[in-house]
Length: 216
Image 1 (cartoon, rainbow, N blue to C red):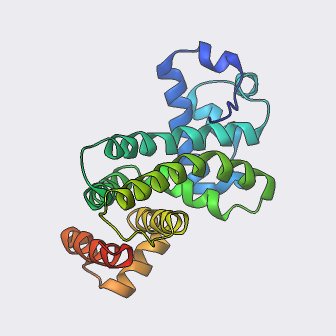
Image 2 (cartoon, one colour):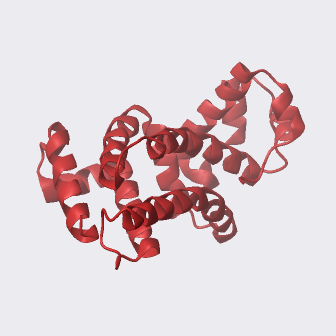
């Protein structure tokens, strides 16, 4: 269960106002990072006072954590719907990859925020984030792999926990590669300047690697 990082007063304002504050904050934190992000700027763009902002959140850290929760939860809800589909392991993995390609392009600020989060130097902040945000996906992927082993779709010798970790790492790298400048350039070095025009080839190639790794 994700810990709540905001005060009750934030829940009492309208959904439209909450979403406006969070959307503006996602852009500010994604572009400037946690340390350099300016809460005065966020408040001004959202049309509220800084004092109101700190009635909703005790600290800048709590504000940042709420923003990250909001951004990543949007993707997690989509991924959870895939996990509930009547597909085998590889069908679900392929669906997730296709969603990542689409979602990462449309919601670049959210993914760049996630990338910024992983490079933030604040150890305590990152410890809180990783524990809350990764637990759900880890549980889902491990269960997904265990079910595939039980149904005989992959080798029973596969290490479920390690495989889930590596699978999530592939997903994370793809998210960054479709949304952040550094990872885009990195992907082009390996796969060519026209890689972003070859979504189907990327899906097919990644699936081939995953199938062989898992013995499918």
